[in-house]
Image 1 (cartoon, rainbow, N blue to C red):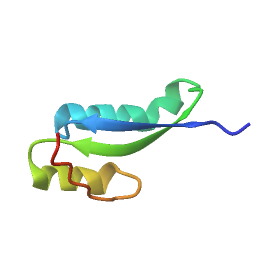
Image 2: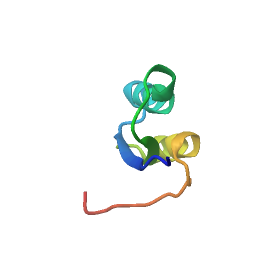
Image 3: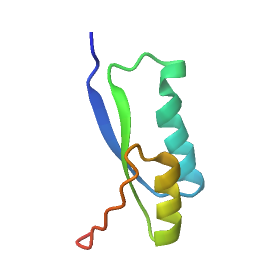
Length: 69
């Protein structure tokens, strides 16, 4: 049976962002999640750092600006 995908967004990109990003990717090693995890967005204060984090973590590697946040 095919699992549904739970798309997530990560707030932050430095130490804790990396820790949580890694945890989402590795959850299947420790548990049997009922859904697949899809990392879809990262947000933060520094544009250059966010772009680097997107290149390392986001599946589709699309940069999107959201001015309304």
